[in-house]
Length: 197
Image (cartoon, rainbow, N blue to C red):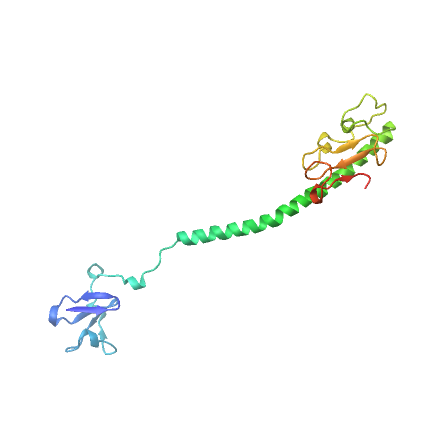
């Protein structure tokens, strides 16, 4: 006789007069005259009639199948897309701040280099003919006590040379930071800054 339960279909193995049935994971004895559909609260469980492990047949119910561990391809793509969106948002905020920081550093470096030139003037009586005279002793530097600056300090944070003119139009000398583009004129991050300002 075949018994259909919520856990699958089981054959009692006793045929029409069989009295042992498998419901779920428990083997039960049916009372005489009781059909499998009528089993319920009056059913008596007989643990001794339970077959050995080798005799048991477990048929999994697809409705109760558990999901395997790990991520699906769709979940992975969703996570990658989310990371990409966050990265773009961070970059759009960081890059402008980074450029502004480089411009401010250039103006600070302009003031530092201007102080180095002033130290050169104190020792030699006049400004240098060129900025390289701050690093290497020139022929016309009678009391040169340098180096007054490192060669790397003669370039701005963008890698451009500082503008220098002696004699200057705004003072003894003009020292100019040309901004991000490294060219005279411009606005914003390309605006020029001079030691006389």
